[in-house]
Image (cartoon, rainbow, N blue to C red):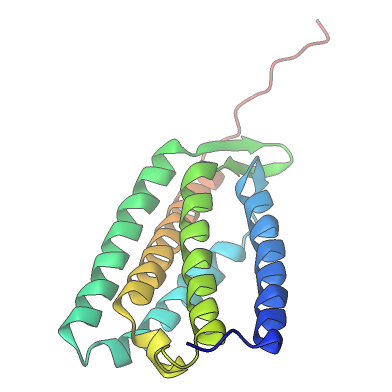
Length: 180
């Protein structure tokens, strides 16, 4: 086996730094109280199913990839429903807020990023033995992880939309008067 190419190591390091920074940004968004932006859940509800559809077209050629994608979606949906139960929802005079359970979102993101980094390292460092790049999107493990993330985020976004519609129909809860 040939030693890794220094250029490949530099690329891998650069990608690892970029992915780490994005992971940090995502984790910061998953922790703490969030203002519900009216359009954000809709973007998730529209884009993730389109991503799943495009990946699913290739996945349905083999039963292992089909099962992996569908199993990932099922697990993600279950985690999304569980995450909604753990979420704290608030309607204030400033708007709608929610505090998600950070552990679930962080764990899902970390698993997915780990898979991407592993595959990148496999491709860049061991290119002679690595499967072709086109095989990445048809890997059952990768499809299961993508399905799990998509299932989670779509379920969570639908839950946020349902809660916001209910919350906007109900009168706001009065805040206690502290001046008396």
